[in-house]
Length: 320
Ligand SMILES: Nc1ncnc2c1ncn2[C@@H]1O[C@H](COP(=O)(O)OP(=O)(O)OP(=O)(O)O)[C@@H](O)[C@H]1O
Image 1 (cartoon, helix red, strand yellow):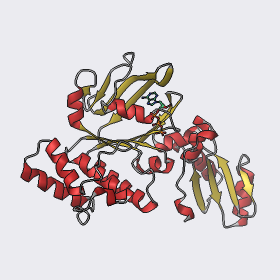
Image 2 (cartoon, protein in one colour):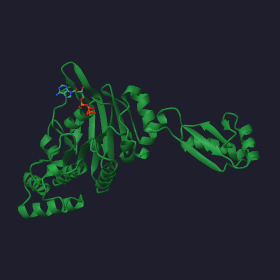
Image 3 (cartoon, rainbow, N blue to C red):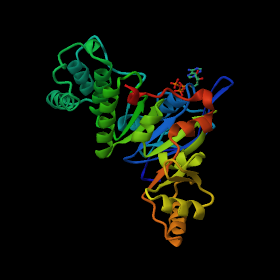
Image 4 (tube, rainbow, N blue to C red):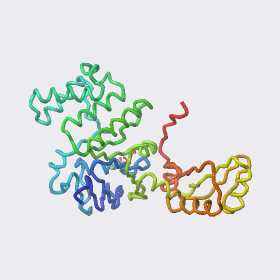
């Protein structure tokens, strides 16, 4: 358990008779990105607020540990170990980016000189040095999010909660944010990320949990989740028509495509199934010119787990 940055057992939260979290278990290893996915209103923000000590879980919850500290017994220690950014941004628009940073340094009781050094360093790292003396209200959405994260890093947190960090950002700003998140993790930080973008979870997360009806509908690596839903297949392509016909006769369960000289076999993409297909080809002395594995994407997973009406917004960056 000691290498877990976050360990929650039976996380519960109700508002009146509405159960938002109905016994959710979370285990996030240190130095990884964990993404909590779910349709609007699923309880993602509620989970972040509980884990970051902003609101209390229901008493019926099990043990919750963040950064090694018990949430019930030691919330102050947790607050010192974490950073939270996202829907409840700490950026004050009336003062400059630099003043926001220095305010943060004061809150963390850094000596003046040290505060100025850390602020300058982080503004530089997040490409905000040129805008440092301008009021934060004049910043673009992407700049505000960067400032928000920079402010969070003043306290050198080991665990960061990012609640929908790229919602509303344009594709370039979104990619910049992804790069920032990757760099944080390379530096050993643990990131707990909520997002409405499946593509984002796929890009960044080591593990993903899908929240639905107050419970985790599924949890695993992006690839593990994709294997949960049908639609995966292996495609074999041939350039030689004779080899193609030979293969089609041998692999009777394959769906042939005479036009492209391709065969398609259902597969979950696992190593075991791939090996079985390759063994059958070897036995028949068949060599395909191309073998590709197609696994369903996270959209398919999300559809299958939470129903089509709940598919979150997808950035259509390729359609630009
Ligand atoms: N203080 C509150 N009082 C009553 N109900 C609340 C309160 N806070 C949240 N809820 C309800 O709890 C549910 C979960 O809300 P939450 O904000 O955690 O969802 P979410 O998954 O983060 O959604 P979104 O993607 O829209 O941000 C919603 O139905 C919401 O209306």
